Image 1: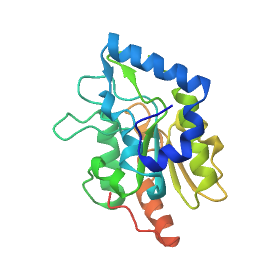
Image 2: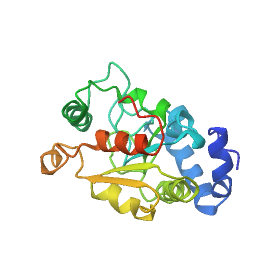
Image 3: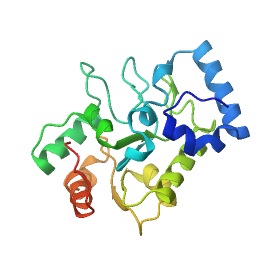
Image 4: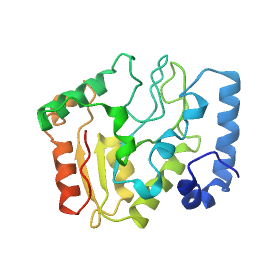
Length: 216
């Protein structure tokens, strides 16, 4: 199947695109975009891949669903475009970044530096969280994580919350750094997300292994 995705990702994922589950997923997603309002805009479904080519990936942040509100989802997990009201989780990410490194963050600059911002499910129906779960996206993104873990060395995986941590069980933590903490949502941020210093830990590991640090 010919999927419009960044060339290096197309190469490493080519076998995935021909599997039965992915063919069925494509038909489901096409139908949803035709008959419902779906986020993110179709051109941004694979933005996490297009923004961070396979050979450029240094850090992976795992999310769950795209934002399901008007104009929020932009194809990068936790991110919204400039001018859009910051969702609560992103507000807390910025608070932790300020406390961690003393800087004002801009999440939309991270992907170009090698931070792959990957949701488990890449699409969602408007105002209906979880509506595109269990349709094939999770199998696809599981394969992505496994390929990154197997084929690359010394990546940093940032897993916020139980969902991301369960999904990250396929990661080889002997060859990569896995940073875990509670989710940055208002329901759990004060249970260990604040003070977890993921940005410092990430840059410390990258520098130790000869990679350029992220300008968060």
